[in-house]
Amino acid sequence: MCMVIFAPIFAICAFATCGGYYGQVQVKVDCADRRDSNHSINIDFSYPFRLEDVHFKAPHCESKRDEVLFLDGDFSSAARFFLTVGVFAFLYSLLATVVYVFYQNKYLRNNRGPLVDFLVTLVFSFMWLVSSCCWAKALSDIKSATNPTEILLLISACRAPENRCAVTQEPHWSRLNSSVVFGFVNVVLWVGNIWFIFKETGWYKTGQRYPTRTASGKRSSEMRQRLYSESSFDLPEESEGPQLIRQNSFNQARGGGDQKAHRQGSFKQPQLSLSLPQTYLGKPDHFNREKSAALQGPMIFVNEM
Image (cartoon, rainbow, N blue to C red; front, side, top):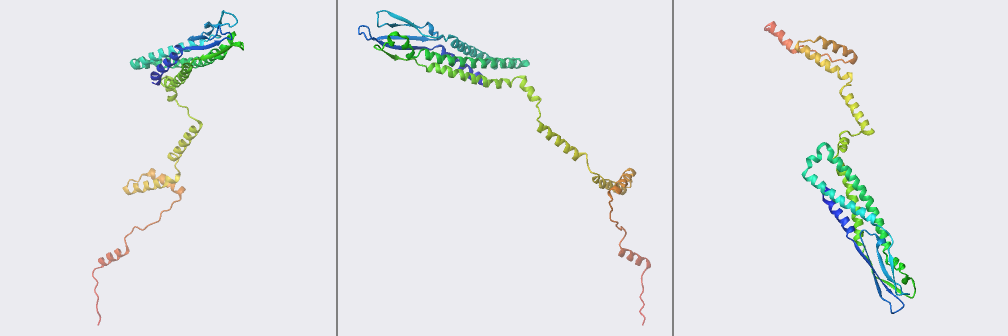
């Protein structure tokens, strides 16, 4: 989404600031001979910065003829390469915008759209990086070739100490400096967009579906499994004995008398060596005395005088 919004804008800024540049250097030559002095020389250059084709006429103070001089350097390849990458990146950004908005279903079908978009984004990221670096180096060389001090050294009249030469106008480099900045901004933008497009491909989904476990994760999983098995299935024998005894006593109360459980409980009792206290479930003594008195009948007491 960030590429759809910002990529066309920064691409336009990059190739517009580079392609429409026009610069001018103006110098003034004052010969010692007053009859031929105050010559203004205008040196114009522009895109594609083929400076070796830029020529100008400078006065020759010792004679009445003028000399024709040329600047040094050809930087058209770097400038055109940078401009071409910007134009194609702008066109592809517009095409991607149309596909994202109107053909989203076809874009996601069979995962072909995200894969193609991912590969094209990788190519443009690399091209922006190379073209921006080349254009930055070329701009530094252009500044050196059009330096007014270097231009004055080309003029033979300025090399003579009796003549006076001065620079009246220098080129402005803010526009070309902005083009270099916009180029590297496009590099950051396209490289950062690789991650967002990679998430739409099947490679990212495959990695999320089958995550790899680390060694610490495996050890913690094995520890949890072992603790669960010990707590759930490996119960000690002492916990089985009282349960079987209670089950046996319950069956005896109901009159069922499950022999298997009784044998199993009696088998466990020697191992556990458990002894229950013996209780006398008989009737109380005072109840027996009252009953015997009732059976004997009434008692007659005789008072002997």
